[in-house]
Length: 112
Length: 113
Image: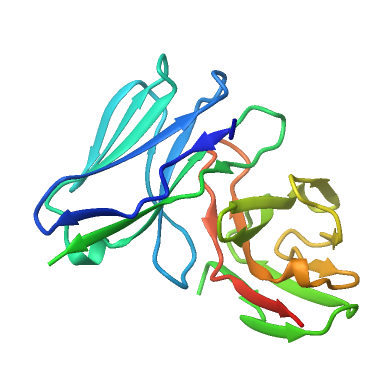
């Protein structure tokens, strides 16, 4: 079992719809959860982070965390073609390394 | 400008050659990281450093060497490049306390022929 799992997609949604991206993680000791956006040929860019159970909203983005289910999600409201990218879920796995463990990413396509 | 830079951005080398990828950050972040990104594997940690002169192995360290004599620089060396090391390499950094947020450099695309 991978430590951080994401559906690779592509997830295709029409412009204006809500895109829902999901991520599960294996280590119950994880405390910090991050969403990065990566455009093709570019580096990952941090867009959201969440530490507590529940929802966290930032503009069109909402991160949701459920530690009991070991599940974190990202909702993108009013999706735009410019949101088309790969979204990486990252988790701090408490192994002693001060690094994040990344999922393989979900490719999102927003159709105009 | 403040930030994290990598050089070169693109590199083609031959099998067996030594290659050094450079990473420089101006934020004075204590933690720095090297990842490689390959299709189907996502981002995998190669090495990381908690401070100058403190480095440790990540998930896939074999064939790589790092050093960190100054806080701002974290070079990654492939001692004898192999085709399996063809990849995109990202350097990242983060401050020592608080969140685990990491910030990435632009990446180096390395091709080993």
